[in-house]
Image (cartoon, rainbow over all chains, first blue to last red):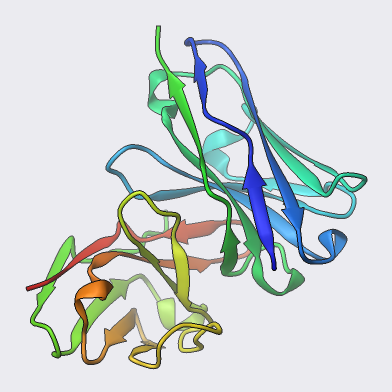
Length: 121
Length: 106
């Protein structure tokens, strides 16, 4: 079955960077885009950007431009999300999600289990 | 900037129909999707392309989208439907989510 399995929880200090991985299985990795969505504690969902499984083409939300890098490794069917200059407001659950239909912007039909990133001094 | 607006909360009695709205300027010109999120779980897609149900989603979930409002309707609401619901849409360069609606079944 289609699965997205993310790396484990992280605790970082302000100003540091975090890199979260997401390994896909059960489908042809290079045919789909993967997005990252985050959710601060008790808050709603926030889209961060999208990366293509084949070739690593990216589009980032304006709010994260300059601070986020999303990459793709076709040899391991894994995407990565690197967020730098962390602030306490970046404390959130980070979800890797598959974009429906092989398009960069569409519904999200498969969600990873989430990776909790805590930023605290 | 473009925004999607949902009511913070909706209450419904078991067996009745729950209606959750999502408003945005000319939202009907875009596709709307809906996600269900239960506590400590990842969201689940329940409606895409305004009214289509993914495999495994019960028929009691339906959607529509016209004008400035997309609507998620849950017919014969069950206790297991109690959750947060988020609408989603996108334009040429970004994805947007509504603020979420907490559905209480009581």
